[in-house]
Image (cartoon, rainbow, N blue to C red):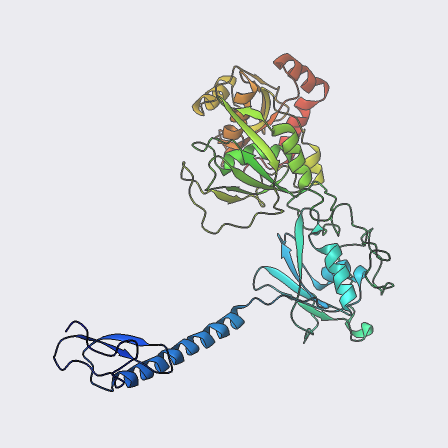
Length: 483
């Protein structure tokens, strides 16, 4: 028969089936929903098997649900609650960070109890204040600030510990200010007094409210003066303002020729307007790079003088401020078309021209022009040789004029190009180009910059009247000639 069994529960209460060996459909009843199974079943066994299997599946599902809930509880991110201990992350720590430095910048916002510095992941520190209000004031006023102009940027978060343990007072690692000041007062800081900060001592404290709290005055060149005896890696001063209200020291450069441009060529151009720290080309956006300058003033100069300038044949670059305040180091940069790395560090480069106030004062901030000044070239260099050098770099010049030699150490002069776009390309390709000289162990590093004149005669007259000829050669006799 095609069907053998109870129908709608009206008969066959035992769930009997056909006596033959063929497949049957067995309908069983019970307190649970009806279970329909196919296959050969022995009378009375179906309910037992179904109940055991259902119980096993329920147990497995419950175990999985419990495990999933436990995993969610473990993986749920913990929100960092406000705490009287702050975690300081120092970004681009160009100068040494000591407990004296941190105490000096934190003390105006509240009484500092303990400081611990650790360098496992870069340079970080924990600062314990006497109250949550003091820690909140410090975080609101210092987060995003530069300890020194253009470097040592502070990123401040609330820490998790309830108390810092200081086992030994060390100026470079940790200090406990709750012990007797006579025994543990640190040595006087080498940084000199800051004009914006009072001497050590507990100031008056009030609850943090918009009505009664005004942020501490900020030093116009950073929170502190640059340390003496350390050659700075950036020069131009920058006034700090809270994040979101001022531009940082990183800029975007668009429109670069992705087939020929690289980090060194871009450095050769932007270094005329300030120190360069890092350059990174973007892999996802061809012809786009990010440049970290020494400070926002240098970025402003680049935007003012280099934005929308023509480069080469039909090219044009655009420059704008970036939302980022710094560029992170790229450990494994991808290779550009010319097989050079897409990221390069320039903080320690001798080709930066604003490394000291004296050196910075010798730079002339000029917009691009078709006439370039060249200096730091071999004293025996001829005009034809110089034209040949630029021809080899595919940036032919129209005329060259050498200044009279005032010293036998190097030569200088003027070189003119057909238009501004070719002059800009010449800067990118030939600035800091090594040129061999007779009788010298190391090559001369030719340096280029834009002239303020629109014609060779005008540039010559300006250089003569301003003492440019003497000054260029005088500079060569004082600065390092070799790379």
